[in-house]
Image 1 (cartoon, rainbow, N blue to C red):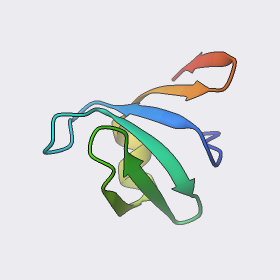
Image 2: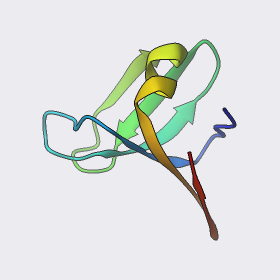
Image 3: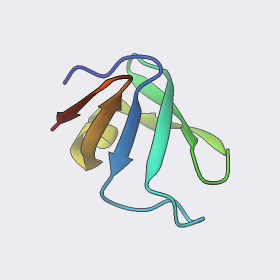
Image 4: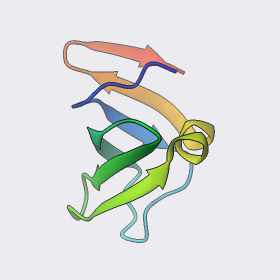
Length: 65
């Protein structure tokens, strides 16, 4: 899956604050994500994140996954 720095992703399960959109801050074996709703940052394993991604939003274009 092609996830880049700065992408905004929509996940299937919401964050405890209720937001489903996250900004990608780091990629690799883990993703560092920032919740768009509350601003909280966390690490999540790449395999787990890729399972739960619903959509990927890039600047100027939208790619459905």
